[in-house]
Length: 543
Image 1 (cartoon, rainbow, N blue to C red):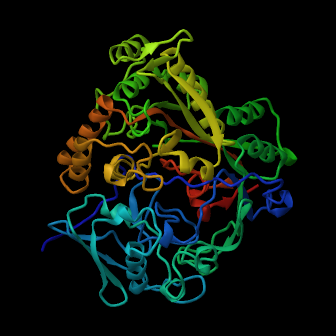
Image 2 (spheres, helix red, strand yellow):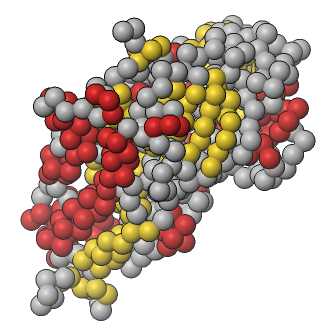
Image 3 (cartoon, rainbow, N blue to C red):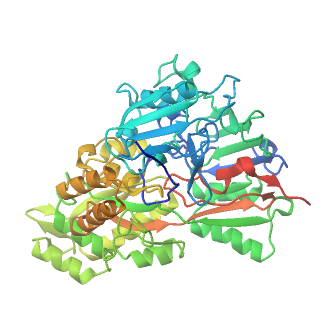
């Protein structure tokens, strides 16, 4: 069969993986002495940490894992480039066979050689029914993966899956270590070994992840010799520690990032005259409210339609994000080539009230509606310490009340929230720039309702289910565009979620390196993304 070469692509929304944030600690970075400010070290503040560091369980599946490499990686423009593969894959004319020639001479950080058997082991283990990887459905298209010698890997697909090459940024694990352990609980989950630019030196859960440069990295030893990710869940605490000099950089919400910009403009400085630089990364990251179909209020289509137009998205962008984002009408941001024109919803409180009136939801003496003895009220949960989610939840509740629906906001950890997701609304998030299949299939497919954090609202729309299948199983761009247009139009008619905003990610970083930059970012940011997505390429600025 005639082969063609896959080109790097930056498409639309991807599978969202929601990870539990750790509790803020009293001094997670260990202070400036732990490396902040040192010429060959960087300490950054992030809001969440993974449950595991094993790619077999989902860690680093979208790239930028630091410890590991995938067959491919993304460049600054989110185009695919070779990593452990020496070139982009050759694809058969029918789109069912992807052949990767592997980079030679690569070794894992323990000195053992990397080869085709490690790639086969990684993908087959993830697809094994015994492996607790919630994202394994992302690899549903794979029929088989085989090695041809030590330097070639062949993937055979069940059906043409247009974005398959994007899936191969997934990190590769060493068979000689991970293969001899329990995949779900073995030592490899917390003490991994990979081929990446950094080696994990320690992981104090809830506090920090510490790395050192891999001197034998195939891409060259990084100039930043020590790299620490301090886990600080609370936004205000993260900003305080950045300002005090315990951190060299941090992800911050707009109002706190703005404070650093104001200080810089006014000549104020942090540790020993630190100069700060703010980075604004465009993203596919959205915030939405789940509307569980199994709740007597949020399960009513009229209530969902009313809430979808009662919310004032423009005010959310202007007041909560201070302009650092845009209104969201679905998982695909406006401006993306995948966005379905005409699916924007205008804030219209009068129409929302009419929808509720016609559906029999009648206002009571206190202004809250009821129907057949059921009060139009429900709880809305957000994660403790996340100021942006809190602000979005409070604003949504305020707009809902104007329409006669009482929303009570509650905060808690994901451990508290997850058992309640079947019936309680959640201020959730998702999004990735890789491909529209990645986020929409997991979020909207009825077959995945109640599967962990997949389809949290238990949304069930047959037209959407069919369109999701059409979109992922066709290699024809026109067919795919039509499919995802259908999804977005169905969401406008039958919303299972109220999408609120797409958020620009803001970071404040000490301006002492050459190299920091941003990519178009997914929902899950701060760990693998941020200005440190390419920290292995940073160089100290020459004085």
